[in-house]
Image (cartoon, rainbow, N blue to C red):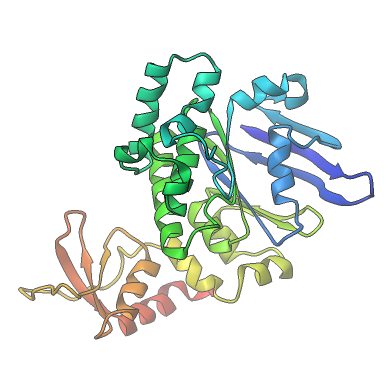
Length: 322
């Protein structure tokens, strides 16, 4: 658990980067810091591993003030992933991943074995292990960066806009892979982004910061979208917050029509019956005939519904989210 207790960061020229920040990043959860440029997101993140010093207040990790812990020891228990992956260009992929274990005295054979396993875990082909960073795509480099941060098996991970330098399709893939990894690993993660869509997709809790490092709202993504506390949060989330909120509402109650023996063509749009209303609406909206098939967990079609029927259901059941 990471606790910010009235934490502020003021620079010698009088600039206030973070102002009286108090929040708790719970164990095993992803806490996202989001906000416009100049709101203190990265400063807050870097104060956790003491690469930036706190001016006032306290940061506690599992109840212990980070200033009472040796800085090197503190950082050994914290993985750190940045926007450009920060890989060593003269080292191979596997050597990049095993950097920290080797520094901690792990023998090369053991370190390489774990490094190869991590490459597979983050979705990279093991054949890439002997390549150099320049030979990888941006998305592949980011995966290597995540694998390197996991190599020492830290309980805490800090991630500073790690996916922002790649194209939208790759970014979505990395986000999905990251969520899959987190389901397996259950790390305590603090994640910085300027993208509200990324924040609500990844975060168990989301902290919206204003310029000057003031905390505007700290809430679950669903509550953030449905109950913004002030005009700043409402404007930052955007006018389509109601549409985003559909991602947190179940599609299981949609009134489906039977599909009978109707075949599903290769171009048919589908959504998971156990998924969200947003996924169902997306499927119907992008379908050539405005209809989408609902699939059960086995991939079997269990019903059919149109875009207009989904919209009517949302209006009747969830009109208050907009």
